[in-house]
Length: 95
Image 1 (cartoon, rainbow, N blue to C red):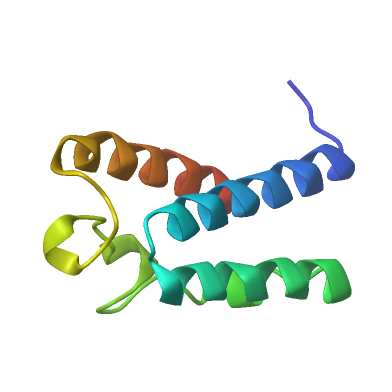
Image 2 (tube, rainbow, N blue to C red):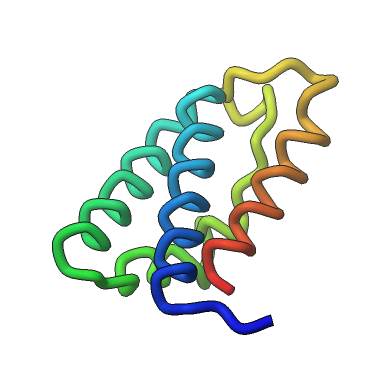
């Protein structure tokens, strides 16, 4: 299936909005603000550089585990699926 540039742009924005929602709901404030800046960079500059810079190295977005022990607002039984959702949406934002 071929996607237009517009389809890809819409997919990217929707993925970022989904990540931001997950982070806001679980009180992962640092990454919610980061994604907000990603959205701003995309809206104003059509740039993905800020988002890509969130990956790699210690403490990167790839390392984030949403859990009670990390001070996030999530119930223990929610941890597996919220992290799975974060992983899936996150991967869609960089594909």
